[in-house]
Image (cartoon, rainbow over all chains, first blue to last red; front, side, top):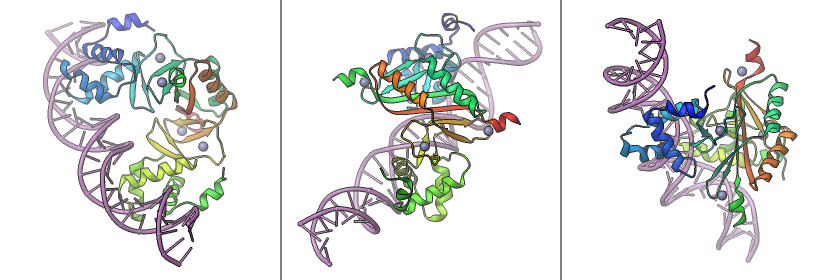
Length: 134
Length: 134
DNA sequence: AGGGAAGTGTTATAACATAACGTTTTATTA
DNA sequence: TAATAAAACGTTATGTTATAACACTTCCCT
Ligand SMILES: [Zn+2]
Ligand SMILES: [Zn+2]
Ligand SMILES: [Zn+2]
Ligand SMILES: [Zn+2]
């Protein structure tokens, strides 16, 4: 698989626009919010956003947060394992973690029941350390 | 906390209707599909479904599958731990599992980063054993 | 140059979810 | 049991998220 640098060089105009908007955000962003921000750059229709997000997910540059209907940049790590997202109820920040044990636990559970996993979603809601401290 | 039997005795008409529809289904069901099925019993508006589903979730009788925008009955087990849902891409069936190790791993990950967890979502997509066999 | 794959733009529509308001039912307790 | 509070209910309107269908363009490979 190509590394992220290589992938970035191949990005299209729309992909770069969406990526830039996501980078600017400190939180996951919804598709229509992205659309609003990118209207000034010529994007007009939801599909332009949804298609681009799908492409960026395919490139493993972006993740979709299922419980938020929103998207966020992948942390810099090149990873094949399942990310764990910690989502703060208060400030909306999201952190991406990896855990070997957890990944292998998931695999075991699947295996035990004969289920062949494809894609795993782990999203934890709660309060981040900063919000918890204040 | 009351057990499920006690809870069931207290269910309202709408709750019973939705519950019955969910029981009949072999897969998670969307809110509007429930609405369609329950029109003949007098339910007319989406809100009647959404409210009832919220109540049933509060009662821990029903779970929402975030990655499907659909709801399913809780397996019979009375559980406080985080359920793991295995969702088959082919047949749409969903199985609910629990895993001590996984639950404690999740707790550890949270703790390490100072995050205080509230609600965890674990949904695995793939192929169930039956579909895999065929 | 020819042909296929990926990307793009646009209009229309589908699918999912909540706001706001008032009424009815049920439970609590004076 | 009558007053009251809390929960559930019904209805209309609206907001939010996502995809279908179709035509056109760009890029890459042979
Ligand atoms: Zn990632
Ligand atoms: Zn926070
Ligand atoms: Zn359950
Ligand atoms: Zn299956």
